[in-house]
Length: 378
Image (tube, rainbow, N blue to C red; front, side):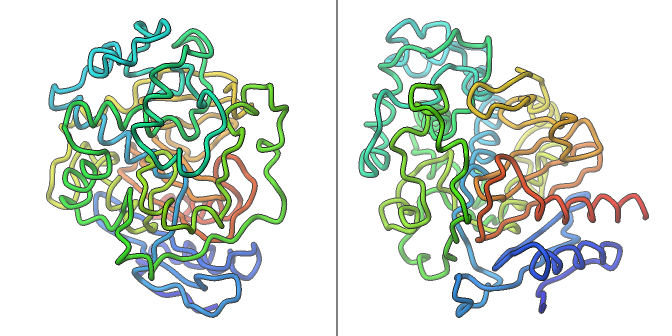
């Protein structure tokens, strides 16, 4: 298996584990990157962009990373909070007055970040075109009542979180979320990551390859909370390959990038707010991300999750890192993002062959374990 890119010799076992993902764990095309103390120590890619293995995965290949996109909404909200423009403890309606409808005056901004606002789904099944309509989706969410008392429990806001946080960002900044992220994060640190893709970049987007079986969470009782969350949502690779999906701004699910660009955008979170010569947040502002918000059985995911300000924190059930002060999240199919503030380590795994694990999976875990083993040996 031919692997491309750079890998510091201290992390040779990472390169080995990455190669084994292709030979032993079913990867088709993938990439992995890591920074330590703000400097890249690993930046690898290999395989193919398509199931037919006709188009090699290139250095600048990008792909839809599903919910790994959410980490971009977290950093943007935290940046606004750090600037004093957003109070995470304030009611959402302070910034978005229409949101107060149906008794949501007590829903706080931090509830949006911790999946505890009680708005994990829309009022009904939406068509793809409706999902691509920002104003339509935000109006639907603003008009609803919370499904449970805000702040009392988490329930993964799989698609809605991006509109909820993104609309607060829009109300404060006057820019769409994709525009704000581009100007305030991506352009500043040089991250090739997009929420709303320019058609000029379509040619370098790799194909997502469906998992062999449907994820169990998509087959729940339609009257259950998970069933209502995913009702009618068509998030299959065929839909996400459409121009409508790619050009829309769906900040919880349709970011396009690769491991290098995710790490580029998130390295500041592992390094006190600074990355690549740019201060995105103050040290105190970055530390806000670690404040625990909710912990327990997530009403949508059905497993125990500990949420901080947007990001997840490690638990015995989700041991993403041996270090407690670690921020993480991942996307459907297996992509992962980790910002370990104890080790000042940031890394990401991105692939096109999807699997059915809810958070992470054996391929991303194999490479991250090799990374931590390498660190321990140095």
